[in-house]
Length: 255
Length: 255
DNA sequence: ATTTAATATTCCGCATTGTTGAATCTGCCC
DNA sequence: GGGCAGATTCAACAATGCGGAATATTAAAT
Image: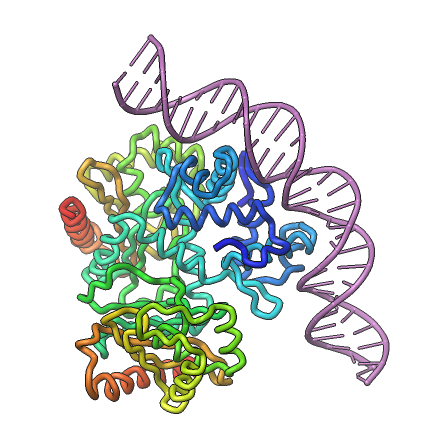
């Protein structure tokens, strides 16, 4: 959260931004609550909230401040900012249908993964939306697919910055093991996640690149582990994902 | 844009927020560009951008700064913040299918309408997404449906604050005419838009309320005017929208 | 390669402005 | 109606944001 190197940043703007983040995490809050949370005087928080409100970033419901819908406009903009982002949406849905799994499209930002599109099919009630959420690249199929498109040097940089925290006992926590696996992924063209991020969930990921080999993002499909076994998991499912990835790359290069 | 009353707001936080808005409008920008645009010293803009970047709100691509994907997370949060928002999504899609029109679900914020869900059906290429965009309540079917749930006093307040700007020659620009029409809408239960916002587009809107009559939002369907004529427009289409609105209210009150 | 121009970034002193505790106002509960 | 908790306003001070100038960086031009 807080500024790492903290150099040459504006303190007051920073608290304004922190308030936005806290309002999301707390699902709305009152002045005093935020003041205690951020260890500021209530009057300070108040002036920040007033500023945010005047600019449409927060709304006041009674005495509770909430994030305003203006952020939906900005969020929608970033989700559609690039052609690749717009095109990938349809393919994510298609992938979910074909695979009967939860399908996602992710991209990299600052060495972490971000969910750009998620689609769970009609039924699959995937608790709540992970849209826009960040995740560690080494913990997921899509993340490892992304990493496999990068040079070893860049991967090391990312490891240095974010390390390899474990989430389950299967998470890769050793950088050599990771680099080895990335090599395999480069050869195969797709990645596996064997309960490395969430116990009981397996997944398959495939990276997508543009005409000049620039990395764009990655697709992945995930499902409860007991439904992903044998050749379906190791052969057929990867082929489905590869197929959609290819279709995407074709449309992307043509348009 | 700029702060109207400008009372008790923090200047530097305000420029930070202005930068976010400008980055969206300009679709990314460099330091100098923003500095000229906002009439600030480049060094000032630079420190703001550094702050935004350190907190994940912007990313730098070469020398161009763009809004960061963190905003997608916040935007997705606000879109799903209330139960009503989550439930309405499915009904908006259903409405689009049943009506073969573009369907939207909107809510009010600070006297203006905001698009919360939009669905255009498989084909209808509605140029670009209006998600999160604000609009004048008096110019649209959904907006007038929303207004019809409010007291005349509240409507007057909104008119005072936002006035009744015209968008086409059909836009209602007189407050008495508007109040009269709102009365009719209250009786009928649905509203019409006869090319009042966009030439060539007609629409039907219906408000939805919660168990305690609190207003939640409004559905509407829109289509090229030549496809919306006769009884289909005046009778059947309203019934479709009313039907979906009722289903929504039922589910909402039960869950 | 070398020069030039344009822009990004850093630095620092000054004035502005954000911060805060105290004062005031508001609404709620007993 | 009085007391309390929180929101909001206020004014004074110190901190910090601002912008001009210096420097670094990058791209283009010769």
